[in-house]
Amino acid sequence: MKQHLIAATLATLISLPALAGKAHEHGAAKLDIAVEPGRLVISLESPLDGLLGFERAPRSAAEKRAVESMVATLKAADTLFRIDPAAQCSLGPVSLASAPLKLGDAKSSADDGHGDLDADFEFTCKSAPAFVEIGLFKAFPRLARLEVQSATSKGQRKQVLVRPAQRVELAR
Image (cartoon, rainbow, N blue to C red):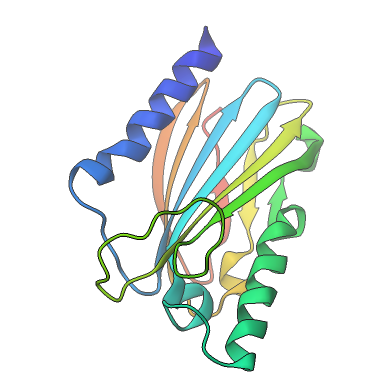
């Protein structure tokens, strides 16, 4: 029952911005964290500019290398996100979607010159983590702000991390 409640709560949190229209702010990203029994899911939504410095398909060899480096960094989510060691979490599936980069099943929207990346990171955990340290600012220097929403069996929390802050305390 709690698992369904957490999933429904997080789905509601995630969908609220969509109802108002998708915001696109360079240097800022959104991070949703859901803690369910035995599982931690982190979802990232970011303009490509904050991750790459451009928001379109790569045009040069250097830009292609930048995309490859970004993808490798995100797929190594167990080093990008340092989860409370007491929770004994291990990385599971990682999915990346971006229409301009032809990643995942992202659909192209109106060509307004703005490209985004959506990423989902799933971890299997033996217990609920008390915190997550986010390595996005170090990995992606163009990011300056993260809007973080978290949902656990103990409640919901919203906070904003501004560089150099990196720790997200989870509701316990």
